[in-house]
Image (cartoon, rainbow, N blue to C red; front, side):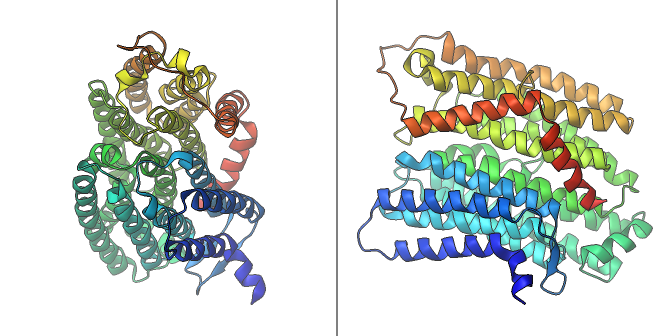
Length: 474
């Protein structure tokens, strides 16, 4: 029995963290410094725990929960995302001090839920894990202090999320009705044979709708710009990175159910990919707020990652896993700059980046490399990620789709260069003091920049891990 429960160690550790933060929330006097260091230490240990458990394999809870390399790789990414977001909380000015323990509590419960989501191989387990992660985020968004738009963003997020959840639950009932089982292993055996029936394809599409909402795929993207802008900067960083990683994982699991035998599913994914890339890039061009620009950027990147997933091959799934990690690193680097420049917790306009190269040269360089990576410029990890998903699509003959994606990547260069122009070429209206950058922040920035360049030039190790994880789906 003890050996079985070792499979659940990362999740149990997250549960322990949640209990600790729940206890801190009961404290009569707020102590932000204590809360931050407790979160930083435990999140760092969480990364070590996830890495130590990466080779575990087995099933739990009557085979509704599978621990394999695929799930464990994503748990490592989620633990890293959680730790890096906590690293950005040295100055958590966007949230009242008395709410800091609750902030860390709901970040932890959301991470726990997403770890459960990537291991769930039973429909109701998937649904419960998804709802736990969603409701944690619904609470985090309106926690922002002294900002009227946060409540509006929170309500919009909740309402759109509830609708997506209802649609997904309706789709789950169709899948169950067609296959007569809720276990993914059994569904994989039955569904490819009946995927041509209207009930099966409609059910699968409706199930995917719930996950497309998490990934902000068109037309389930309407919440993203307002929620990104309305939430506290650190909350937005978490939504833009960790939650996207979990969404990629579960979409791959669900798409793999079809066995690659449904033309209707492929056509739908191609259409949504093109629409997401095009809309995200075109609307991002006119944005003046940095977080709204990153929101529309995330919509376009959802389209890129779908290219790898819709290939429905080991190469395609591996490229999607690599792309998810690349996006995690690049986006966190962008939000590191947002948090440090807007250190008072306010929103950051692109024009406010003016003179950043003099105020904080390291942050300016990190921002430049991060946005160039998002644009797909070599030698960054973003270029390698795009190359891999495009190559996977070319293998399957999706030449037109790759051409459209490359055109969109070219369009994205325009608004990413606007960010670099603001940081390096624009001058502020008045002379601004230098931005103080602490030693821990410098270490974190250098680590992210190094990861973006090194894994862009030499991605072989990460790619081998991604390929091994992708084979678990085939």
